[in-house]
Length: 113
Length: 480
Image 1 (cartoon, rainbow over the protein chains, first blue to last red):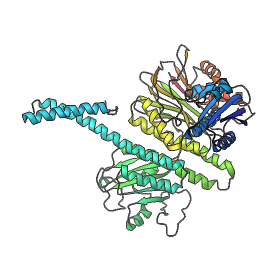
Image 2: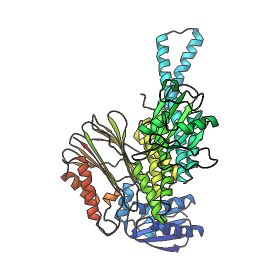
Image 3: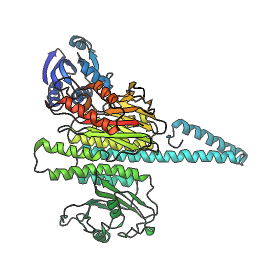
Image 4: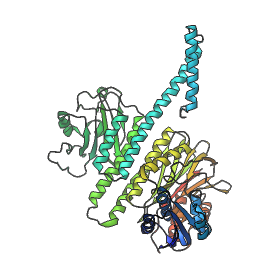
């Protein structure tokens, strides 16, 4: 998994690439997310458009992220979920838990001011 | 009626009737219709008994939850066991108790430690790991008699015992004056008895049969605590992450059922192949009544030791709740909160749980975020069992729905974990659901065991050698 982050005002966009499979990937994601939360950022978009594959452990990364952000009264949205990720969300019935968007722009625009 | 928990509305109605009877009695000074009153008192007796039972169950549940919490925090084995034994006193009052271990190696005698002792006899060597309520004299005797008596019997036979009156049981050896009743359950790993939990009380029949299930649940936690410590010692030489995974694998192995229950007209198969590096699959067949059986398949997120603990918690919570609660969607809701509270939202489990009535083929199930099992009907129609709710342990307030499926003669139920469905996915195409269905259809007439094996082998072959493969679990339920 590769991870890139970019700030858009008060929003951070975390872009995941490649295969997301838990284990070391989870630590990388958690550390990066923490860095932004420590800076006071509370609006997070996870861009999944370039994820080749994700298994259920990879999904755990997203669940962990959502929990962390929510505990700090922040919001985390998913952008460009692939078919595989959508199917994982369906199987685990977490579709309603995550706010998903077709584009990074619409995810950013959806944050309440 | 007995299996349903008393609802508040029922109680309010009961209270209304009670007040009516009372008012009538106060007005007239006599019982107008004795038969009516007698019938009401019978209902009252029944409901109050149920209420007492469910209150006791809540206390038991709380003890299990606290123990799971301690285990999850990876506290020292002694601390976990001490909390267990002391907490037990609130729920199941006893006057003396202890946790005993089978020593395969000659015991070390710790100087000044009154707990470290043994008495080799008949090939079994026991040591008292932790004791409460024995005076020095009693304990000195205990040192010599440890593997005799009821505890010795329980360990030798691997079966729990309730002794209502110690004076009427030939196996009982007096080690403590005053003891009149006793309860003992073995601590069992996959195939061996490694110890026992024993409680004694000064009154006759202090331990009802029902308390066995609580003790047996606690005993499975004791297994985890003891195995962790034992394997840790054994693997002291090994380094790094290897050791952690080894421990998880061992614990997982010990929690899976050794023998599948036998049901008339049904054939069951359960196949679990742990991977080299993960270790989070779990399944169980829980006999509920002569005809009903609970079927569980689950996948714990993450790897290593923590996954093993979540699995132990799930097993215990599920086994405990299915015995006492009627509706399985309620069971799921409770287990979900239990996992959320005892492990935190970073740990989650996808779980499918169903109850099969082997007389009618009726299968009531809840799917908590698990890969949907396939029900292949006798006429080859394929249905996926999806009804339920989110995976367990993430959303505390989650609600679960249940559904009913019919397994008519000739029907086949295939349950699996993502290790099967996602095989190959990390470096290419996924094995996927369609291949599972095709294989099941093609081998429908083969024995359940063979169908499970065929699907697992095909997934492994499909995955190839390009990368390590996940845990694989396949359960097959076949209506003959």
